[in-house]
Image 1: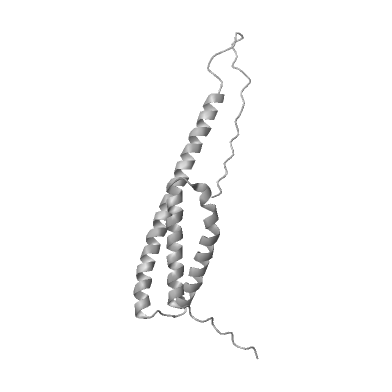
Image 2: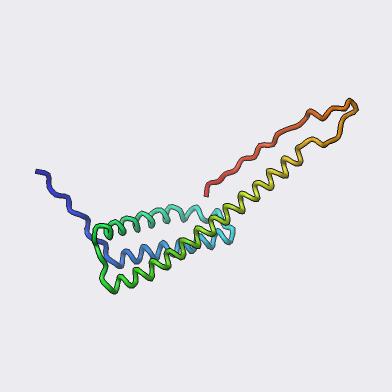
Length: 144
């Protein structure tokens, strides 16, 4: 006979609220860094962000299985959840705006390079267009 595997104990409400608070603060910090154009300072936050999101996901699985919070913790959870949603929305918006601005800047640079490398509409004495046209390659590191 195979022994039954017990479900892990439900998380303590204080642990859940701490994870939500930490994740909210991290998202706010990341948003401020994006807006301050301190992109290199964002990378160190990613590992912590991943850990907090996974931890929150594990907590939320308990609630899918019927775990409930005491009324006092439920009120704190609602307030914390609303702050987390607001922080995540603002973070996503800042990242999206940053990505769009970066893409536009790169397109402008590539366009300027192409324009500077195109042959002029003049002809040589033999009435031919110049043949020394070169193509410029541009590489973009999109990791963040």
